[in-house]
Image (tube, rainbow, N blue to C red; front, side, top):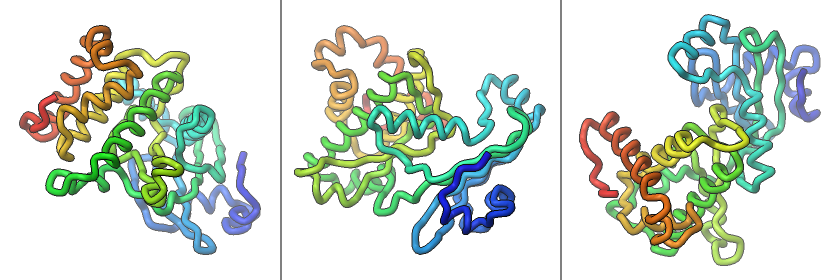
Length: 271
């Protein structure tokens, strides 16, 4: 099975487009065992191509015995993109995909998305905040937007599993039009997303702890954290503290543990 617009089908070849896509040449952005992300350009337009090779039963059992959920193909990310579009969270625009082989062990697949031009990751955007703090209105808008995205995900049975600020892309043009259109932000890297009826609390804690961990060195203060908690919970802070104190304590503990494991020291940000 292969779904491609006519121009890309012609670009990759009518006869064996699948094989051409799996072996495409371009700038490799990421490569890990059975999967690879490649950037290509056609007619001046950029695309990201994610290729998933067959993993085999050995790799599947290895992950399961390690209590990890293996990434078996592009279909999970395809479902995640469609679900995010349904709930109003902006993400990558899918333009093509394909599958072949016997699932789960011997299936090969790919996903093609448009490049999100004119964007920058929140990690990069906030890199100088410690020495050069941003305008308060802008920082507040970013905190609110990230909290709203997190709330929408978790409210709708979605957890990201790689919920770090590097996976939030800010639309730079929207910064100039914030007073009219509002800040636009895209959530990317969805291949490990889980879609469920209801997200178990442990997975919500994992998402929020990852977000907190990745924000600890960008110059935020305790008030910024409290603002996030308010926007995420949708409750007055006093109510959230009274009703959700145990939950936020577990998020804090996990975030600090992640930081200690990564940097071998305690974070400077006191949550």
